[in-house]
Length: 482
Image (cartoon, rainbow, N blue to C red; front, side):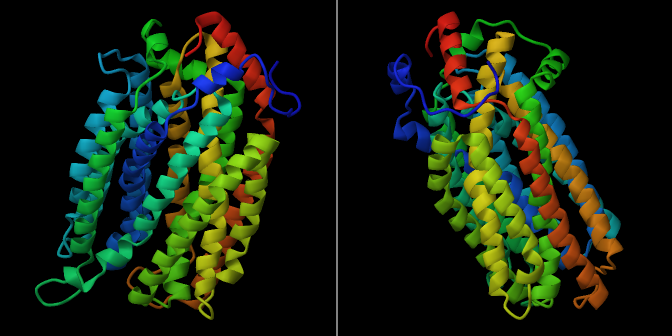
């Protein structure tokens, strides 16, 4: 039965099989380290886009929003392709690992090229560079990211162990996030000044991306080398499925649709915090002072990551006790309060309060949401296998990713337009008071409302621990223990 009331963990028949599903620390660590490629490839680039292309090179926020949205759209389609492709390819090395290896190397090598723009370019040339480079990089990163995400959904058959695996990954992601938080500060160091001694944020960003790219390559190679694909023998025997049929069957899965809606709604606050938060922090809290803004941006990102990492063990224990759905709903309600408080905590009278506000959101986002959602997706994969007879981690992971990026795309377009409608002028360091007031209101109200709606939408997610024990028993009776 699907749905019903949360019940305590059952003991007995599956105890020995659960023991077999426990992963070694080496496997968990190797898989977790692979997440740095995702964090640096996606978020380091996007976190530097506004300081480099708007703040330093004076590109219009609306044009940057268009470029970001186009890149996310391409990213979403490439995710769908590589997720489907990694479900259906058959090689001597498995379905996922060849793509993980190739994608990590190429994405790490090309990341620095994203910051080869010049201050001498006009607006049109700069816009087309950002647009084409961002769109060209998206499929390269998708080649890595979708097989990597899919691999995480098949590492273990035990529902609670899945949360533990994602907790390991969450810790590594937060550490990578700390480094990411200081990327703007590092790129703005005087070491990267031009020949005249003037700041050169483009050059600094390029060197920062070079270091990050090297880490991406090492992490991806290690992940491909040390992590195996336990479900490959099962998947190898199943027939290949066409792209359209795979997508349709994915969307027909009821638990997956509930997870999808929750993710879409949460994508709004996650995106707006980054998009609108930069303008509020830089132009209001720090009054356009670059040195102060880079410092508090780094501190805010660090607080977000460290508080998020500290919450991961709590999320793991609560999920085992209350169930994944209820635990995540509590986190989303708390994130609503944290996001709404941004209206008061982002203030020039006490800039350190903006650091605290960002950290409180990190508890719900990094500590709970991005640990539990992948674990819940792995449970959905089992449900889908029981109803469809196929292991389709790639299709489910890529559809989730595509939908997330589509929602992010819409948010980016809207955020850039909203910033300009608020009266923002990219050539002014000091913005009008009415512009600041509008930006503050948008920054607090829109993300908080979306987070609350995500908590409500999650109520429709039906899979409980009782369901997962039953589903696992049924699957293992049909095709044996993995």
